[in-house]
Length: 122
Image (tube, rainbow, N blue to C red; front, side, top):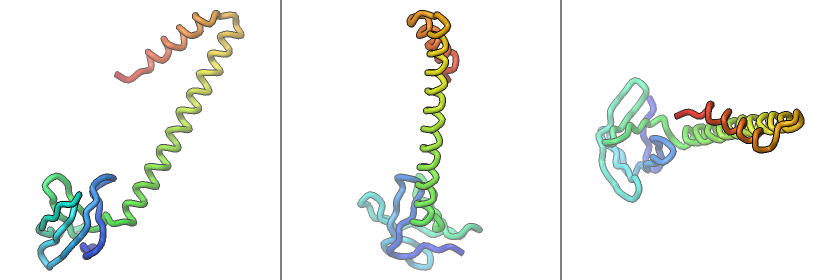
């Protein structure tokens, strides 16, 4: 079973960082944004858990877990940037084709804006 350890950080998400100041068999004292509070430890099948009043803090969500989450978010943001870049390149190609086929700049621009408005999520 995963347990909270003194002197280690645990995370509820990107901004939810808790430091274990002290630990007993039934309670854990956590420091979060300069505030220190004592919480009762719950034993769940996944390991120890603390209910902090707004979030559930899992003993398994340690520094290693936080690094994996950050790496995953970095990868997702790179993929999203590549996707946006590909879309922008496709739009530029379509605009160039419209200009080559004799459309005026204003007409091509209006057609591209109409296309974007039709795709927008509202």
